View 1 (tube, rainbow, N blue to C red):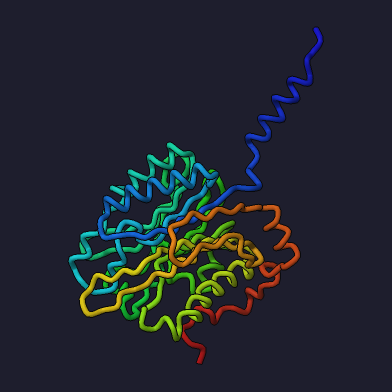
View 2: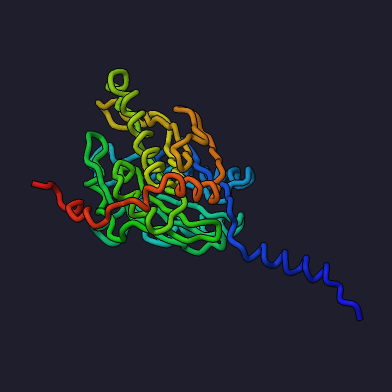
Length: 314
């Protein structure tokens, strides 16, 4: 009997291809205007995630604290009502959605860990609806109308890279983006992409004088993380003027969500005032080539960095 080797070859080749990790995958960040009604925001975000998946996105990030307006403009105990326990409303909804669409979803939410202990957190939900990881924001700001220390306990899980069925995902949140240590520690654990769900904007009264430099610094620091680590970076911000307190000017969220490649090059960027989906391709062969030619990780002097753990070197 003659063996039909060509059919066997095709079967083995197809099986081999299905088992090999993908060298490329598409990521997306969603830029939205959000309000103070969690049910509305959940419905809206589900729709936009579906739209992103239809456009080919395989790993999709929502903005920081997706389920509400940015309540940290004031210190008000009533705002703790926006918090939810682990694996409740947000997890159930987006777990089902991730499984339905076969995508990874990064879901930033206000976590109630126990009475009196709350976190600014994010689920990383895998394509089968399971939890690939949980991240709790490590750096908590306390600026005018960004009174986050009143609400959020600093994260205690550390910096992580989360393996998913699409790729190795690192997630940091907003204020974390100013700290090169956070990006480095996440990249060293194998993250291919750093996602930064974000809520950042201008104080309207300062915009004319400081706005351009503030926005530029925000982008530049994350592009620097991309270069220094040879990693993709994706920031998902919100938009719109959120002015809900009397006798204040509110915060004008500046949008400008973006995706950068491992040389800091801008692959996609959003406007300052429109709801948008940004999509770009992660190419692991390109990332490896960049790291081979710019071997910053190789040349680190890890024997000389002990003092980095000190508050001040004096």
